Length: 477
Image 1 (cartoon, one colour):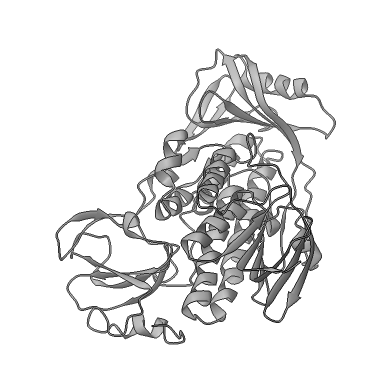
Image 2 (image 1 turned 90 degrees about the vertical axis):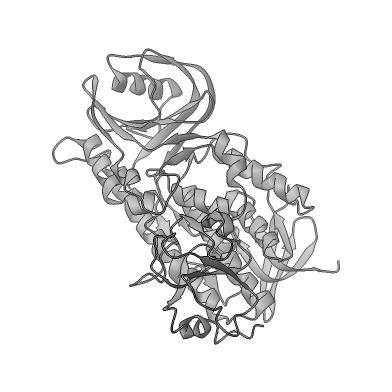
């Protein structure tokens, strides 16, 4: 069979693979995306989008579709001995440059279905019920053989195929797993209770912090229940919830999803093979659900990677740009795993017997990763920081705008803050925004922003050479 030629082959159509495919479309890359499943997820899995994910969804125009479907939540509470002993949201309230200072509690299914629908409408639908049989790394790309008998030749390939990734295993990428011997049950359902429902994440302190109540979209709520062994019944998990809620009681009117899992932690040794094969999402990092970081970290992987592939494919960016995917995202994954590891272990072990309070203190300490807003790709100065969101005034038209509504994933943005000329020889992949003095949180300067909303370079208005220098290794017009 004659091979199909595309820019990018994507293995896996969970939220990360679907995001890669949609971002690739926005970036002008041709793709094939496959998955073994019959369709997108309908229930279960991840349950929240953090503040940074919401900003990224604004860049690609999905925010307005998803936001009304969820429930906002910015408070973490502790319940002990029949009362709330702590309610905190300071780490959300303290966020700068952010219009949505909260989680959006929304099931992963909604994210997958929105992305899957977009791809189908674009005639870029996922090839379902399809698996990989073989991948050969060639000099100019990858040759992938599918279970359908089709053969795809691509310049690049992304394995977004989950924790048991075929791509990672096929290329023997080391992935050493830590198992801290902690098992959880998770139940999504509609409940009836005399406990006053609040839109807060509640950690219950009994003998340990072994129950967490997560508000969800619609009529459902989620409960995480830590169990003493891997051998238990659904009713035993519900009994533990009621023990934690004392003196209140609840019952499930209906259960939408029930599962159990043992905590596993790992970060792949490599994210990039020869600048042709990449892994993302759970294929590259796994950890406990604590902190709600899995879906959000995977989406950020996709946003970090796809524009780099597009800039090399279409605009002759240097190959070194692709190497930054691993250096930037692996460092984040290591901190995410460290965050979730601290959180999950605090539910089981506490020197003072204050498991739930310890848990919330760790959330506050590690809030930069839990909110997503503390992630940065630099070692000093503003380069590598996320661009703050803010209302601004166009210095030429005086029209007010919101900055993230003006960013676009398929090009860079140059903010000229103050009065200055557009730098000479600026490549056409840069969109220029003229920001009036005093209408932004930044002083007057040139501010070059990457497609994923992070600051790439800065320069004073009287010396813009640093902006041109950023593109000096690019063969771009």
